[in-house]
Structure formats: C-alpha cells, structure tokens
Length: 399
Image 1: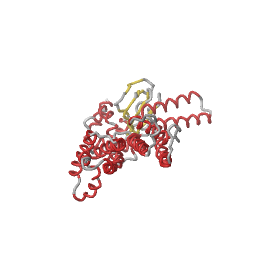
Image 2: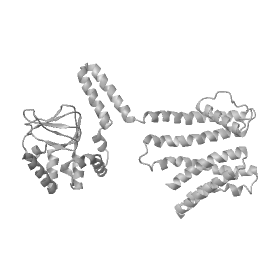
Image 3: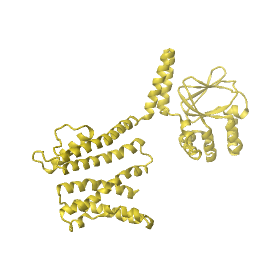
Image 4: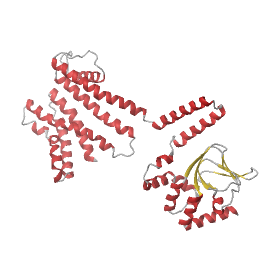
C-alpha cells in the first residue's frame, strides 16, 4: 500500500514542479532535490518489492528516477528541459489512486469516485495552463511577472475548459488558436464527463433517503387515487416514518439474502449482538446455536396497539423484542406484564404444543424477531443443553 501511495505523491509533485521549472527557467536546487529524494525513496521500495521476473515493470519506471540535481550539472538549459519531459510520464501513476482507495473498505462509495477526480483535475488544469504559457498565450498581459502569467493562464484554462472562454484572454497566433481548439475539445470531453458525474454522485450521497422519498411519492399517489381517509393516511405515513428512522428504509432480509451464507451468519450475529446480549435465554449459549438461530429469525414490525397473537390461538412462533415494548394481557384484557427490549415471549405454546394462554400486544412501534416452531424444535434437538435451559425457564414461567 505504501508503494502505491508513494507513486501517486511523487507523480503529483513532479507534474506540478517540472512544468513550472521548464517554463520559467527557475533555478531552485531545493525543488530538484525534493523531487530526487522522493524518487529515491520510491526507487528503494520498488527494488525491494519487485523480483527478477518484474524487471520490465521496474525499467518502465526508470524516467521516474532520473536525478534532476545531477543531470542539471551535465546538460545546458535547453537540453535539460528535454530530459525533464521524460519525468512527466509519472502523470499516469496518478490514475492508480483508484486502486489505493479500494484498500479502505469503510470509505463511502461516492468518495471512491470523487477523490480521483479531485486529484486529477487540478493536475490537468496545471498542464493545460502551462501549455498555454508555452505557446505564448500570456505575452499580451501587461507587465507579466511569472506569478501573474501563471494565474492568468489558469484562469484562461478554467474558462476555456468549462465554457468557451470569455474573450478577455484570446488566442492571436495560429499555434495559439490550434491549442485553444484542442483545449476546448478536451474541455467538452473531460469536464463534461466530470461535471455530470459529480452532479450524479452528489445526488447519490444519500441514496437511501432518495429511495425513501420516492416511495413516499408513490404512496401519496396511491392515497389520492383511491381517496384513502385522512386518519388511515396518517397511520401509514407514521409507519413509513418509523421505518425510515429505525431501518433507514432498507429491507434487511433482502440485503442479507444476497450475501454468501458464511458471511451472512457473521453479519447476522453482528446485527443481533445487542439483542442477544440482553436475552437471558441466549446468554452463554453455544456460538453455533446463536449463528443458526439468528439466520432463521424473521423480522416483524408491529404498529401501535397491534396484536402479535391472541389468547386461544395455536402457537406457531416465539418472539424476541429488538426494539419497543410488548404488553401481555389476560383473557379478560388485564395487563399482566410489560416486556421491553431483550425479552422473549410466546415460547410456552411451542414447548407445550398448547394454545396461547395470553394475548401479546404492542405498546408503540415495535421491532420483533420471530422464531417459528420448526426452527425452534430443530434447535432443541441439535443442542440438548439449550433444550434443558429452555425447559427450565418454561417450568419457572408455568409455575
């Protein structure tokens, strides 16, 4: 990774320093020395990293290692400029920034595309501006000191690349006109692509929210078409607002289904870790048991006052509370208990194969995980210790 970033840093330094040195005939040993030191550091790492079979790749990087401070002593200025041109081949190393950014998995996907543009675009502007100076494009500027010439050239470059120029700095000679034409063509191709992609990428910085808003638009159209009553509209809007706040509009199951099974287990355990830690039933359980169970858990979202199950119904699943509160009611509607995050309920019907002895109802919005009878019984058979633990808790509750 270090060698890759070293290539990019050296390439950027060379692409900025060398054109300026060539144009303005700047004799600054410090700048040459800095470039040479960076090159030698990279050369040392490259030689140690490449084996004999990679000698061709190493030779391809030779222009990067040409020592400016030494060559400057043996070539006159005119010839030295031609020698320095070879080092500008380092520009192509800048495009390796994409490969380096891929080594950072936590980086936002949008930044993976914006950062290369942010690095490459200033270098391209610098090249074009220096080329405009080289063809004499700044000779008509009044009292042009080097800094003024360069800043004016950058100004001309940006206006020409992004538009068609403002006419305050215009080409006069055939060479300048040809160069300006080429710059405008590059601007149409390069900056048109860059600007359109930046606009697209910025709009996707919060793709989840855009998708959520688009869904809300469809729902509103559905409401208007079927003239849904306002109270029902309010309930549905509240539901989708809760979905956005708690799940950011994503369907967890559909995403997990696209992931390989061995990774899906690890991700499911990670996502359920907080709940697992708070569920007494699963404390100290075998990790293989937990991995199997979390994959079989089905997400259930309850709206306020929704009945999860009713007394007298056959038991087909037990539930874990991930978020929210569930109240347990008797046959007569008397509140027996209020269960909060980390609690589980409904297991008695699975253990005894009897009907539900109570009613479970959500207090507010509630996120549950359901484990159906088939998967529950499979876990009991495969893990006898877990079965004994469940029976013990069930006996305590039955008593």
